[in-house]
Length: 484
Image (cartoon, rainbow, N blue to C red; front, side):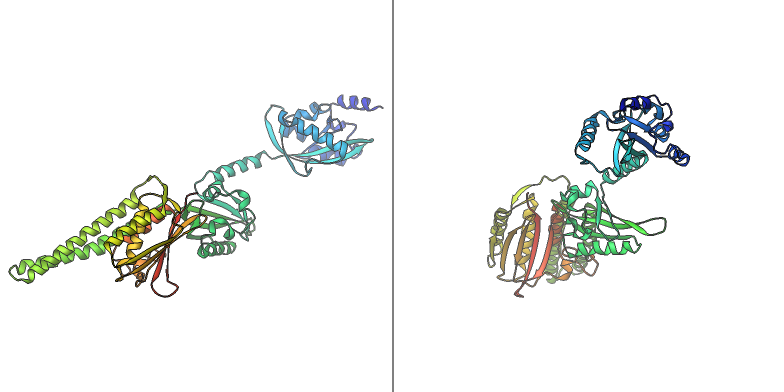
């Protein structure tokens, strides 16, 4: 029988299992095995003609096996992929070089009714009667693909930062929200320990928290904490958690880290705490002063001392006015949304602030050095922040000496304000330079630093505080996002 006769004989076959090329025609066991498997089997020759199809092909692609015998494999391949399939087979027959891995190829196949079915194909080459044949094992993966699409829809369409980790903390996947926040690509983070990724390079505390989270989740715990992470143009406080995922035996297979940006919430929480402190402590104390002196005046209107007490009343009233003004600025800084951010030249703002302070405090010496041409992204509140820091460095020391140094980094501009004063009391630093809670005992007398802190938080910057290296005074540093 010639090759042509053999092909015509195959095309006349109406029963795929009776195909003369069926390699196990003498083995009833194998015939039944192939006939009853739930995975499709399809065999083509060197000319891409289908020479065999088992019954499972009908449940996957809708074709009775007999309908496919003698037709081209292109019947099952979408039009857009046909040139690549033809070229790939031709190249392999000519050179023996595979253009793709034949083990586990995911492909779309065309159903009899015209729609595409995602299938997983494993392909093998063999011979029969001297002919080269190629048999593919087809598995319908429609359900898996549907699950993947649902997972993708949830994973990448959330405002939360979400990822997948190996139990040892190695990043497997990260959603688009987290990548966009840091301006990263997937390859920048996949394969790294989560604590070594860009987000957690804000400081040792962030890295250590991420590492602790992995260790505790790896022991089966749900870990949760608040940390500050690093973004492309700002930092953020996130409600950070890592959840373990176990299999049916209870063994941990994956860890799921999540982060919810709570920065605006924390800013408003700080604001409410400050107002609470203002109303319960500062304002109440001043009103007690007013009330006490008012009672004295009413009792002794003719005594000369009453004049002094009246002066005290006036001073207390003035203090209340100043506090009220600070509270107003505080509210403006935290509650107003939608401020337009523009490039602000740090050197120009510092010169204006320092010139004004020199007039008000002529005994003080203030110098400005460093990258004074640096530009940050902000608004007119940059002047409020710098005025508060420099003034705070001046007012606590007679003939104070203040050195201002500007550094420009790749992502931030840092303004270091060195002074020779007594330093900022711990009560003033609580909640501004650290995460210590503001309590009735630990509180500051003024609102200036709080105002500066909340403005800087709104910009996505932060403060540092440290004693000077020479032990004479302290240094307050404000880090502001620079323009890109």
